Image (cartoon, rainbow, N blue to C red; front, top):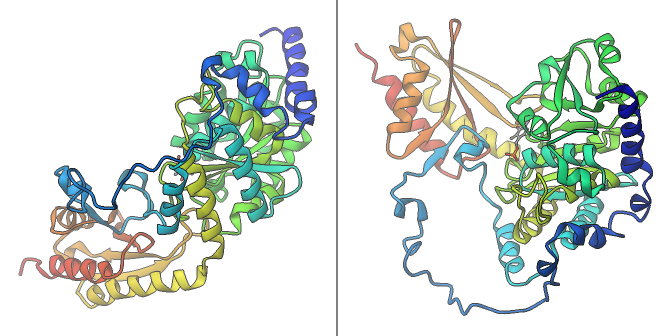
Length: 439
Ligand SMILES: *Cc1c(COP(=O)(O)O)cnc(C)c1O
């Protein structure tokens, strides 16, 4: 892109992002009009509030009748001592959230209006700063991709249709080298190039007219030279939006508003991890104009990059209820309960020769009770990885994390996803394997 054209585009972008007449109408005003332009006309029919019960008696026949849909499909469910891993299903949905999802499934509603209304309710519950709102996305990854789409396109329909072709648009996002992660694929999906930096001087050198935003991976705060407040200050000094991905960084629940209060322009969270909302949900929190632009790039709109990131009325309602429930929860009591479960496991194995125990609460991501069982393979006769494989192959199947390196041979356990009684099952199974070493 040549410099003159870039400059024109920069000023157009600024208009779209900050000053456009569209944005002054506020988050809801004009939403239907812009959204209408992104729908096929014949499909823009208003969804009437029709109530039509399907006559279900509450009794399942056919598939699902045994109560274990996974076993009916020939699968084995597992005891999850690994934590809120998406590949295992993340977390178990709160019963009350499930109940309101069922209620949500009984009616039609305009999804764009629902997103705006849920966003207002979530903002109230989280006491977000003035000028901030939220939308429910199909996960934190979706919040990242759609958030960046919005940063790049503003409300300009032609740009929304155009990306990931960034001709004429900004095209670079700064990220600290230590903050690169599998989730930055979602940033690259919008077409931007990630520019790696390490020092403040690098940041100053890297910022140019193509720079669209600055990305921060919250869990990498200790690893990068530039910490979250300084990163934000650098972005704002350069008039750039700052995005922070805090997907797995609840608990504590105060984090849900912490980074918006700090001044981050966009913040992403997972809805299906420790907060136990719908598995395919997430939150994009941020400045109203940016959140609105993100939503325009997302399902239900068509011919948009985020059309693949569909979020249903059930998830929107389910996550809204989940946040209410999560905020009301006794965080300390929950932690105590998890420590008690980990203590049960520890008591079952700590006396075995070659076994030692440590416990911690990771300071940022997955900030909940975690226990490490260290093995001295010379004395236990078995390595962590073998133990974990045996547990997974057992009945019931138990999934724990093995950490092996030249100087560590460790099994790690969290209790965040353990159900009552599963602590004892894990302790018994572990003890059996660890005591069975060759004579
Ligand atoms: C889990 C995670 C994501 C993805 O979140 P989903 O809700 O599964 O889409 C993104 N970033 C980080 C840091 C995560 O831990």
